[in-house]
Image 1 (cartoon, rainbow, N blue to C red):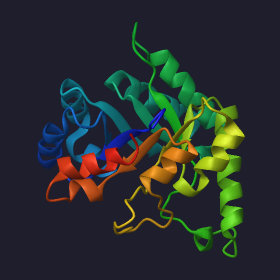
Image 2: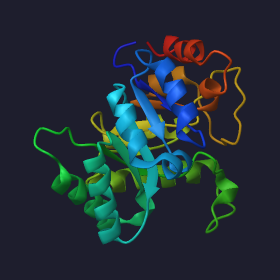
Image 3: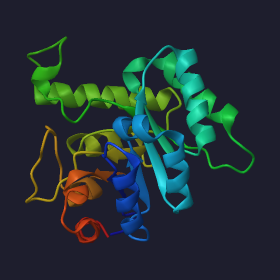
Image 4: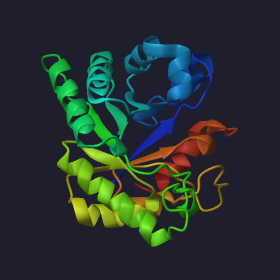
Length: 237
C-alpha cells in the first residue's frame, strides 16, 4: 500500500520491566511505541531514554491540558526529553495550542527533529450520549465537532490530531494531505473492541488517510505479540 501508515504499539503497562521486555521483542518489527500516563508516572524519563536507545520512535501520550504557560513549559520539557510525538487537548483552545508549539520550538536542540504535536479531538471511548453539553447528540454531530476541532488545531499551529477511524476521511478532506492523523481504537475485524466505542480496522483507516495507527492490547496481551504485530502490518503494507 502506497504511503502506508506507521504502526504504533501502545506499551500500556504499569511499570517499566514488562514494557521493556515487550519492546525488546518488537525491535526491528515496529518503528513506534507509545508511552501513556500510567507507564510514564511509573517509569518516567529514564524509560523514554531506554526506548530511544533501543531505536524506537517514542509517542509520549500525556494529553496536556492546562493554562498556556504550563503547557508551553511541559511541551518544552517533553522536547528536551526526546519525545518524537506528543499530545495536547485541542479543547484547550488557541492560546494553549499556540503556546505548546512555541515551547517545542524554543526547546529544540541544534539538529533535533521537532516532535509532532497532535491535538486530541474526542476520546475514542466517547459516544454521542457522552457529550455532557449535548447528551442528545447524534453520530453526525459528533463527527462535525471532531472536524471542527481538527480545523481549529490546524489553525492553531498543531501538526495534526488524534481522531477515531470514523472521522479520518472527513478530516483528511477538510485539512489536506500534510496534516498528520493518528488513529487509536484500531482492531482487526475479529478482535474485541474492549473499552473503545469508535473502533476501526487498520485497512480502513489506512485507505481513508491515517498516518499512524495505535494498537495496544491486541498486541501486548497476545500470546505471540511479534506475530500479532506482523498480522496488523500485513493489512496496511
